[in-house]
Length: 118
Image (tube, rainbow, N blue to C red; front, side, top):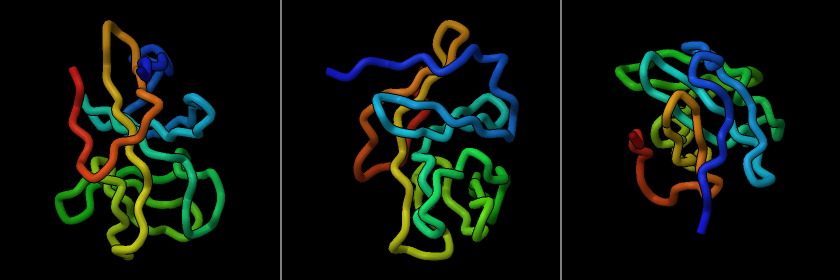
């Protein structure tokens, strides 16, 4: 059974900025938007580079997204789906704020949108 991996203290994760963490051998991009945290794979399928944690976070048509820092495709933070290309998506990892720390589960979610875990 997978276990939660502690990434950092809650106050170390700045709003609207990403960080990269190694979780069970996977590079994971972790983002905070206000009181929500999101975790996506760090690999950009368009540039074939591990750069998503350096992407710009924002709101696009009512969806929270991260823009690839290289080719600027937008990925939904909750689902990992690329807004410009239906065939492209990023893996989404369960993430939570727990007792003052940010934690990620090493097994990506499959087939549904990430929910905030208390």
